[in-house]
Amino acid sequence: MKYKLFKPSSPLILKKDGDDRLPTPVHLIVNENDNLSELPNFFRRNFAEIRSHYKGFYDVPMKSVDCDNFNFVFISTAQRCGTWWHKYFFKFYCDAIAKYPLHIGLKLTNPLTCEKLKTLFFVGHMPFPLENLNQNFIDHFFKNNARRVFEINPVYFNNHATSLELIKNISERFSGYKFNKFYYIYRNVYDHFISTFLMTKRSNLIKKDMTLFEYTKNFLIEPFSFQFLTFQWVEERLKPGTVKIIHFEDITRDQKTYFRDLLTDFNVPIDEEAFSIATYLSSKKFLDHYEVSTGLTLNESIDDENHIKHISKEDEKKGIDFTDSERNFIKNELISYGLKEKFFPEFNLNL
Image 1 (cartoon, one colour):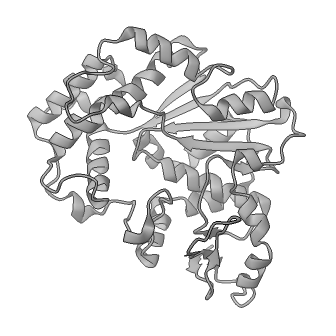
Image 2 (image 1 turned 60 degrees about the vertical axis):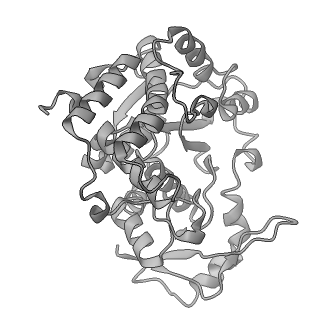
């Protein structure tokens, strides 16, 4: 199938009671056989139902689902490591299963829900205590702090004493449900930090003269270590396969196999047509086409008034890299936090 974007002439308005909001451009995803004259009306007739599909966990009428038939797909990603790739895969897969008109532009909430699949899909970052990130950078929050590791991990991965409110609510609403899988996605740390730096520059969140290494040293190493070490710590202690630490580059090499294995791992039924649609529409190729052709951003957590793009362009990356000594510094810092070299093949390349 060949897909293209089609924007209804009258923008839809996302509006809650007492909340005046600007019209939100919604682009329908159509193919060459679609009747374009009827599609906007069809979408509007189903708009209330479609919008309710993205309201979030607290509004989902899944109370009748028992714990044995309920699926919860939990994906945690390091920043810039496939967060929105996963969100859009789950969105398009759920939409295709539910037979909603395929579209892009409604604010994606987390978790995404699919009542037909009896499944909640959650994609997000593990929270880092930002109060420990300050301009002085004197006290390292996590370095050589085994006690803190011991405290954070059991509560994060426990049904009933979790710091993640979503898991707590699920354990209450689906009494007896046991969480049996957690995925954590990360990537080559040097590419990760470069991508984060470029995104922050596009968003005008740092001083123009701040260098890549300065930003990485002051803002990125410690939160990444906190996040990664948490999953590494639990992966070593829980039943094998409960926590899967997955390299982003492995997903990019074979997207279809990865998402097929993921759905199977979480006991989510695979519909081949919906799966084919979702893997294509969530691909970097299509999402980049959306950003380029519409001028909008696929990352709906970004204030879109300034049209800040989520996907980095090749010309942005020119001349942006770490020196060999900077790479060694980053490597030694991460190892000193307790991260294991076996997860980072880039550490063992000849510099």
